[in-house]
Each structure stands twice: as structure tokens, then as C-alpha cells.
Image (cartoon, rainbow, N blue to C red):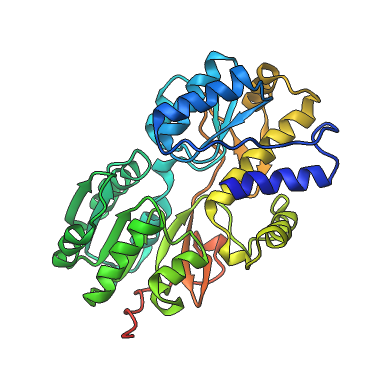
Length: 359
């Protein structure tokens, strides 16, 4: 996320700034504590008198920051807080540019149910942290699969603070499910599950994780190479490295990222894209009224549609992006590419997932 924010600042300053002013980010460590998040945003607004505040990482901290901002009549644009609870806080200053969590797995459900009945999976194992971002995705997909005739082989919800995933992985393996749906928070927990499956030669027909496979080259390295990543699936809210070049500011984003951080487009984290998208929306709103006034900008955000790397953004009354479209992505031959919906696919989905490599 920090990379996304700072990249936007670099590119903006190189192009003359915002309304002719150079911009700078003041990024403060919240130590993953809600209390520190509250303190940080209070300091930024009340003491430092920053022009704007934007979202941190994770839903709980997003809500905390938005509450502080609301007290000071500041808008709060963010890209990560997408759980249902985030939009139930009556925070009329909160605007999320990303796809809402409850929609993330809808394309995966549609894809599986679109398979011919003679090859369609029959059972699903669900394992998720109780995090407000992951569990709603699982709890939305589960009844949809069951309505489509897929039986639940396992439903396991564990504390988000869990660090030992081996017992949960063993339960999934023991279920023998055709499909595994993992409500993971990031690279570390996702890799732990997948390494356990790999070591035990557990080969479901499909595996999808809510987060982890979207972390580019870091994910591939954590699994031991491209062969191990082959066929693994992750939902996505609208950006990928080889997206059509008419995606808003795609070329500037990728070239700027590589110049600043190195690597390849496949190395870019979705978190970086989300942060950059936040600033794209803020920039458009500011340029529309030529003002830095937070109250005036909130009205602009409520009544207009914006363009981002992730696609169109239009805010509902509760701050959700009601224009965002979910996509399904799969690792194929070392690249994370869109495979569903079919009208956006660059390749057909690999089904079933290839078995784990032996070395």
C-alpha cells in the first residue's frame, strides 16, 4: 500500500503537482493496533493539519481512521476496507474504491456451476479466518454452492490471530473435498496451507484463496516456483498486469512502478494497485472543482463516477463501490491472468488444477 501511495505522489509531482502544489505523504506506523490508529489520525488532522487522510491496511483500522476523520469533517478515501461491517458504521465520509468483500467469490461460484455436470465438483471445503474481510466472502459463497448442489465437506472458521495452520490444513485434507476455498488474509497464511497440501500430496480439483496468490512473485517464491503456483486461483477486483492499455493510467503506473521499485509487472501487489486507485479518485475529484475543501469534495464523490486502474468507481450511499466488477484470476505458466468471466478472459481456466510437482 505504501508503494502505491508514494508512487502516485512521485508521478503527480513530476507532472506539476496537485493544483500546482507538490504533494507529500506522511506515513505513520500503527503497529497493527486500533488505539495507535486513532492516535495517528488525530495527530495528522488536529496537530499536523494535513490536507487529506487516506486509508490504512485492514478493515478495523479503516473504520477507526474514518471515525476520527468524520469528527473533523474530513473525507476518508480507502481501498482495503471492504467488509460488510465497514459499511454498517454510518460513516458518510467513508468511500471505498475497491470491490466489496461479499462480491469477491461470486465469479468463482459462477464458474464452478457453469461446468458440465459430468465433470463438475461435488464437494467443497471452506476454511477461513474470522476476519471481517475473509469470512463474509466464505459465508456468501457457501449457500450459493449448496443451492447449486455442491455439498459442504468442511466448514472451519478460526481466529484471525492463528499462527499454526497445520491442524486446519489436516482437516481440509481429511475432508477429501473436490474444491477448497480458503479465507486467507495474505501471503503467510495462504502459503502455510498450500505447503501443507503440497507435502501431503492433496490435490483438489480447484483451490481458491481470498488473498495470497495476488502477491505476485513473492507468492510464487513462497511456494517454491511456478510449477507449484500453477492452477491456483484468487478473486480480483479489476486490475492485472496485462490489462488492456486503455485502463486508466495503466502505462504510467506500470512504467513508474518498475522505475521506482524494479521487478516485472507480475511482481505488483494488488494492495499497491488499491492504494494508487484511491489517489486516482481523489485527484479527479480535486481537479473537478479545483479545490482542496474536504466537505465540497465529499459531495463530488457522492455524485460522480471515476476511473481507476481497477475500473469504474461509483459510490453508494454507504460508501461501497457499486460499479466494480469481480474477476477470477489463475496462475498459468508463471503469470496471474484473468480466466473468468469469459468475456474478459485471456485464457480458459485450467480444470482440474495440475497436481503438485514432486520436487
